[in-house]
Length: 480
Image (tube, rainbow, N blue to C red; front, side, top):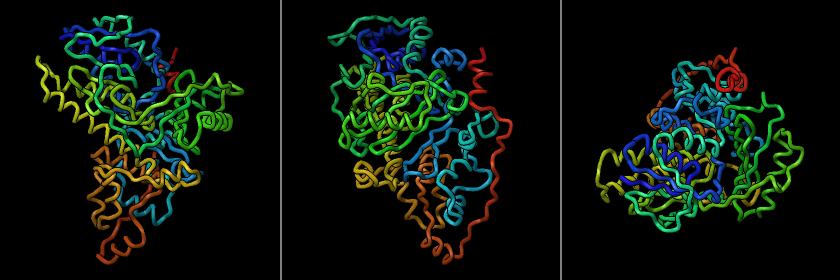
């Protein structure tokens, strides 16, 4: 089968590496215009990136040092519920459910007025470690090679895949810009937002208003303490800022909606945030240090359209919260392998199967991002007032959140299923926003039915003798 990949960057070289691994006998070429720069800000992954690296057979020590990579154990959120609220997390790894059930926790949280961040610290070993600036050791709660995500330089990673994986296995690299649609059995369009060869209609996600980002990189001043094992997200007046600590520097950007501030105003607000909150070896932030990126949140109606498959930004984009960009690439690639299998002839049913699977995954992740905003109590700026006034789509995930407030109190335990990853994420976001299904009306109902909720015994994780992330890396990935 003849395959043409149009565009390099992270999407292009991840696609090339995946296909050459799965189908070493295919004729695979990647066309790349050296004058087209990579977006190059996708520096953070989810834990599910591990599934893809395992398929390729990549070992951490083979590539991490070359890409300035560090481990990501969690995502921390500051000021998303209200300004000055307790920091909360969406941690990676399995929850601790050997001490108490989630409904017990929420019951006692309401009775005891527990803080928003306590749920993650109680239930997740990695969250407790992150808050204490420790790196989690492998135990019954955590395995680094199974549950960690990564922070890395996306440009360096694409180049590493090109030179150390794809080309050595037979992918042909052609440094030429394609103007006309090439002849091939399948064309993988990795041309970014312009989506050069896929004209399928664009489906917008209206409940996620952010459409811009101003990005930069800053150096460390106190690396031993600044190098965290988490992506930090901080809400500002018109959006939120990410901090991604790679080995050599901090990647950071301000995601905002340009309907509520100009690009210049966003840059000024971002500059003030950096000056006030990020210790850096840079004393001031000149305009030349910043780059502005624009996008339209949404997806292709058909990522696989005819003989063209859009991959990466060409297929769709949800704003950067929770690192969906790289997730969509490797998730869609593995979906393609499942649908394609060893079939020789491509049918419309295969295209429909692929599109339905990818669209469902995209839409559910968009809803997951939406609940980070929909549960907020902020209304201190026009942006946050708009967020509070928005209507959110009715779907499985958002319906589950709403049901937490309408089900009978004695059925809460049936709703909370830790085996469902979507539910797990909902709990972390709910608790982080201080939303709790228990209140005086529910307590009265529990009393009416003669039900009871068991007492729980708090048992903090033992974090003694754990190393800081910096100490851990110096003894492992960056030992030389």
